[in-house]
Amino acid sequence: MPGNRERMNPTTAPVASDLKTRLDPYMAIIGPLAMIVMILAFMAVMEPARYFRLSNLNIILLEAALYLPMAMAMTFVITQRGIDLSIGSIAALSGIIMAFLIKQFGFPAWIGVLCAISIGAGLGLVNGLVITKFRVPDLIGTLAMDLVYRGFALVLAKGLVLARFPDLITNIGRGRLDWFLPIPVTIGLLTMLAGYVLLRRTHFGRYSIAIGSNPEAAEMTGIAVERHRIYAYVLMGAMAGLAGVMLTGKLNAIQATSAPYFNLHVIAAVVVGGTSLFGGRASLIGSFAGVLLLSMMINALVTLRIEFFWQSVASGVVIIASVTLYTWLQRKDRDGARSLLAAARTPENRRLLRLSAAIVGAVTLLLALGWLLAGAPNPSG
Figure (cartoon, rainbow, N blue to C red):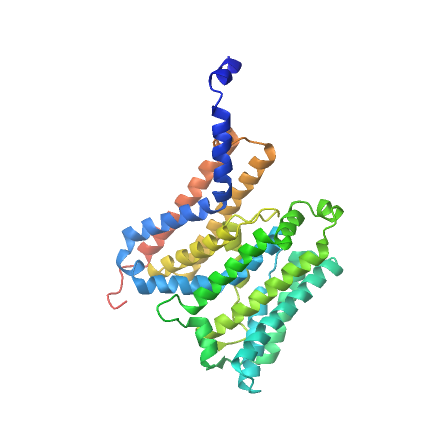
């Protein structure tokens, strides 16, 4: 009898509930961490000597650092049920204006950096006003503004590549402190730490989650929904401006067509890290893990000498798998499943788990296939 079994095991439900409570804060990073472990295991078999050397680790960290500030800000935007597709053009336009101020008008480098971040924040403010005041959907509004900002960058640069910047700019992009992490990695980690404090310790973080969960209910409780959405876009713009400075320093050059895929890369990292596209769920630790995962995956594909097109295929498959997983988790929470294992036992979710396993297997197969098609490694490489 079910009732007798419950009486015979009075501690089962509390233990399961306690386990679920302990695991819930870490659910967002389980997915990206599992994929990171898979990449490490795969590369340990395919290219251990090249992938695990210290110089390659430095390359992965520098690549991830460029996206960390934007991933932090995008976490707040997506948590509020928003999206920003203009961050690549904001980064490029901010970098170009900074370059003109330094190279043609003789401004000190530090003033150019502050201007780039301020310009990014201003462009983010424009995005927020377009979305909240003119009632333009986030997707359409930021896509349109992406075209506007990119057009301004093209008009200003006139096809020029602006290069050779002062040491302050190059240090921000690729410098290293003595006996410490590279400067861009330090900047990325500090922005993530600041974002974590914002999310967990301030009204802005709590309001962002409330707005994403139910904007109407949040407004009825007295939260200034439109104002806080504008704040999120201003923060996003400022971090895109900072990324423009970091990109300029990394390459020691900037042009109007720079940063074309920033938006897709950052959104992918945040979604892979467990922040829900439907709002109300945020994880900055997950966003950090998502940025690291994508940087490791792209670096692995480059190490295996796989063409750029295969990199795009693998990135798209990872995004689909992640959105599928977190959509399922959200439905599980909504349906009131008492634990992850209980939800996984339903026939529908078993099919989803098998599909996710098939997708992960397909990514692994693509990696192996691309490595084989690339041919034998070049000894000089």
